[in-house]
Image 1 (cartoon, helix red, strand yellow):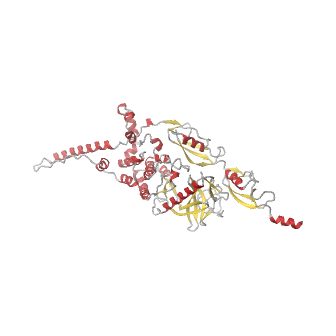
Image 2 (cartoon, helix red, strand yellow):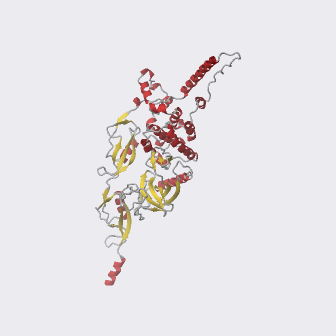
Length: 565
């Protein structure tokens, strides 16, 4: 481990020898994330590894420092925990038994995706890669580190929603970057209010890039998708994902910025694809923006806006009713030309009245055609008013599938269920139970991990919404999972093989490294004990411990014995 005594591993600033960093307020005694590289690890002889900031099914993201450029960087390590493990040295990565081919194929995919992303570094609206390398039997990418907040937090801090003018300035540059990326065959598949970040200069950038299998259900990777932003095709391991998938995530994030709420999860909307737009918002938003969102958030991919250029056209300016109708129907009924004014003519005001009347007729015809081809967007209050009148409410059995998909849902059609109590239940078992159900009442999303002195490691510590509340059937329950106690007792490892000892120490949350020593009583290759510690002693989770491995008897002692005899 490299000595970086005064370097804060949380912000890469100078701690000035303090336990609490004066720059960011972080306690330097906080343990590193489980399975992550140790604090201060050096990569390529250049990059210092700091605190692990987040992890998903693909790998771990760290803050780091580039000692050559003297800049703060973001380091991404390929470390799919579901089929690999950290070696006892605390650095090397090894595929779990039987997963060697899967690991190698996924590593190749990770490197290929990173190289494609590196070619996009001229796009200022995305976080790009500027270094890629292999080390420790895995791979790493290095990107610029920029201080930012998530779009979700920015919207919450801005009063819960943004105006269209404010949102347009943030989203349109990202849309342009996504259009360029997708034209080059590079997709994101994880666009959400979490992956969209607001920089200190007020601009928005897209980050959190991952390989495609991480962005869908039923693969070898734990899925990293955001309910409400994930398109329906991401819930299948076989359905093709393409540019329209990214269009859905982008539109869902824009919908969130404008309303403060994400659309309902695509799994729920599969049976009822209608959107709810608050009345005040429906009045405040330009109609062409509402139409663009409705088109981009169609559940079925074949009915959704196909690409970002089309979405840009729909969002950029309100099209005239005539041009939109021509694009949708191919033709518009031609009306008779206006009558020509005779030389001896009527008074001017008469012609004015005639012109107004004809204009009204033209507009009435166009509006009638418009409502024949474009499903109306209704607000919750309007829906409520309609549903209160039996004569105005259509019989659901009389609606076609197309009518159902393009309409808006009324609150009365939402099926509510009681929120189950998941606390203290095993997270993995809960996920398996939900996955096994053909029509689950809810989906479970992992928000993060937390230490707990009362909840066993791997079990749910807390959930949102809380047990006893009501939620929409098919909605998401967001959980935090226990990492176990913040301090652990060192297990007894004396006499075990190195592999057995490393597994036992790692399972308790410690990071093992090895050191060889001579031993008169322990056979070579087996563990003598700990350096500086003893079994049963309590240490902080994530602490590095040195395992003393026997190198056999000291040859010097044998020679001394021979001389004495």
